[in-house]
Image 1 (tube, rainbow, N blue to C red):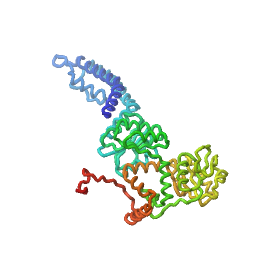
Image 2 (spheres, one colour):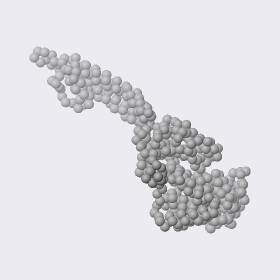
Image 3 (cartoon, rainbow, N blue to C red):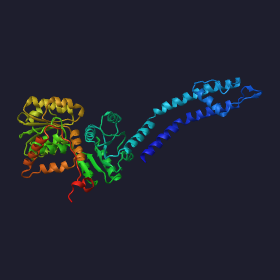
Length: 477
């Protein structure tokens, strides 16, 4: 339905813009043909010859294009030749007018938009395999799309930035990735993206705006009550609203996710390496564990990340000192709160010289790198965790050699990928990380067995549904 509507828009715009040139061409051809038909020609056997309508049309066809095949079906009279001269100049000028109108039409932004929308709808309709809809193609969307491509899962992408959509079309994805430049908050665009199709598995709202993500999620639930919704949110109020939508809803908060990973790393150092190995991190290995030291930690930046990490560290009895330029009342568990920008003076006040770890977690990559360099000058033995906000700064963060890099976009993309391609991992991790006797030994046994049987090979996650419809041969009788 959406594709036919968009095609109608294309036809309407073409007819509206080309109405004048088409009328001009019809009038010129009609007048020219009528003139050639009624103007008398030469006498033959005492009888004046007249040109038929067919011959007049044939003559005008090659005359208007300046091809010129001569005078047919017989020589013209001077009156016919004079009329042919007028028709030639008039038709050429009319064709120039029509061609210039076509050129202008092809540059019409409304036509380009309508045609792009129609072509996008057609590409979505050709998707026969299960697919997901991604709203927002920033750093998170880019990483997620690459992961989906590697796992053979098609995606339909909507983003308001034309440059990002052009970037999608330049990528070498292994599966179809239809992309459209538009507002994902418009219900029509969601329908064009295939939201109501039976093979649409999920819609993923990962734009930069919390309100936009919430609106997309609400619209998706209204338009398709059965579709799975995955929304990125870092605000507690929005998370609460999302949780009340009903159906299958996953709220992805990269800061909460990373704080849980940090907690599991403190409790069981092997988990972090195991988790990174599963997501095919190039630097991950099952043979080397990263163990955060116990002692006093300095947290630079007390936003969402700083607060989540501080809560985890306090939970495990690790003392923290916080440096932040803003005053706050929520300092529960913080041993020392230093208000101000992170400088040599504030780092010293926070006890950096006696600290064992540093978390540089502001929302500015330049500040985070500067904090790290400044802190290392005061204490070279720090265990360092740094937040990387922009994917384009990856080279600088790799060069500075930190123990852990927390990239919110990467954390969110990996969690969403796990939800889509390996939903059972959540239950598996929850079982292994439960605070019960013997779970740490089970974790070590799993890692040891994988290390022996898989080695350094890259893992490939596959989810198999054992049901009578799909796997009847292995089901118990």
